[in-house]
Length: 269
Image 1: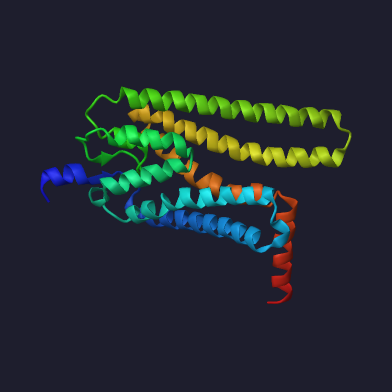
Image 2 (image 1 turned 90 degrees about the vertical axis):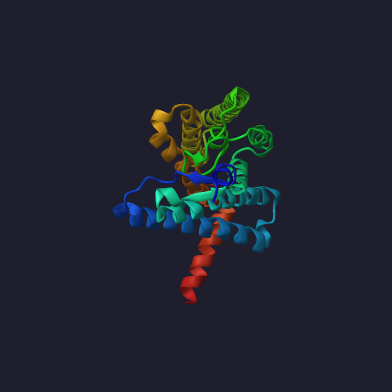
């Protein structure tokens, strides 16, 4: 393979920095997480699609979340687990595959924004070949270029700040209204249910928000690469694993159907 082909068509993905002794435990852990995410999210989709009592607009909206979680996790974990057993110098990916992976990684977050963002990136020529990340994302792609990437950085940071501000603002307003209702209401059962539901929702939201913000901003600081990699992986495995439990089992109708399914299975082995 000549240098020009390698430089422009084949990229080297950094992957996870694990020792040979820890490669198997890390692989097994990621495999168990991936299996759990797939089973729980696919199970939620099958339950909603097959149960006529769950064919309501609210439950169909829930289908979007597991679909998004399945997509966001599948474009990351299988390739990441495969690279664990490869030498660092053999973790290759084509530039086209890297762009596709980066696009679907960001579809997991905000699709319309990253159509433009990926477009701004692939217009750049690239003089480097190493993806300094466990997987391909937009920031890693434009780091391959020796051109001026100020436009990409400014656009990405401005949009990120806007999205984070709007997201935090909407969540804050929503929970203030819920808290106001709980304070004025004398229904203890309703208040208890609201606190239980909101606490789990806010926990998942904070994990997703902090991990996402961490790996986006730490892309600008190479000295914190290990923290950025950990945050990026957490963003793609923790919320997809918790969402079926939080948004699925917290919904009364879905929880009742799951309980009925397990009771039938226990009675009729």
